[in-house]
Image 1: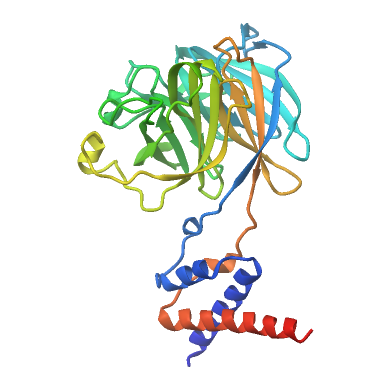
Image 2: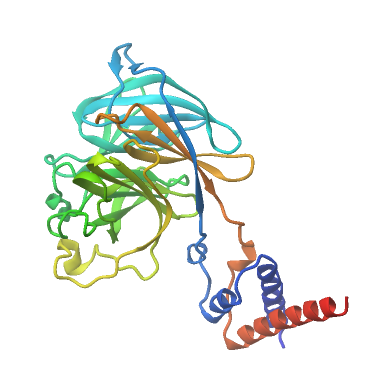
Length: 405
């Protein structure tokens, strides 16, 4: 046995021991080792998050003052992004205004205080829905435009006094088939500034019909790579929205209204279902599973999904409820809590009779982190056998010790 082989098998043993202690199922351990690939990427070991609803708070003012001293009315908050030090920026739809907020939280993620600290006016008014902050160095935001026309795109604006347009990111040509008021509703940017995600709210006409109470709609989750200040649309994945929820009243819509890109690359979606009746809104938050999903940005799938064969992403429900009772449209990742979990902060669009200028919070429960030794070169059948022997031997010793008192 070579020294390298001995070290590798020793590492396998330590890993198995750690995984057993953490309570991971043996089948998972076998799957990890049996892959026999050169390396196991962190994204291959998907965490399974949980979400706790922590309530809502209505803003105490309906006005903000922009960088030029001009006052405007706060209405139609449709997207929100975390800046730094408890500061957030929200975008208002059908306008050219942004709202600056400061929000602090209690230890469990409940909102403690929420104040409007200012506003920002950009040159062009559009139906902006999603927002993503770039960071303190560049100090800008990307905004997604839902309206048609102009052609679907993302716009980057500076947050300095000039508020100038820095760049426009055109979407793939298939998005010319978006349905008016069902277009680019969501936008998120990962904290390491390596990727962004956006999606249309309901299906493009080239992909299928809109949502009904009997069936959901198929939308495109679009990943955009970020290299410095260059943002490029890359992979696309089909995502099946849930049907419009049942209630007393006329069905209206069900679609993806925002997305959250977590630091580990996990993607969350916010779905909003609405009827003209009671309960008016149902809020759904899902963890997306890309395992086995088809990249629909390639070949004939890039031009439309009707009549095509493909595999959509999977999704795990984290929150499905009508208890919020308002139109939760925007969602972003907030700061870490003392217990290691993180906050999700949402904004409500007040453009209907039951919704106010409201902030909503959730506690995102981070599962116990896996040991970093899991990301290493996995061997073949010999190492698999060794791992199984070590696990079973450890289990047998524990059973013998229990039996012996």
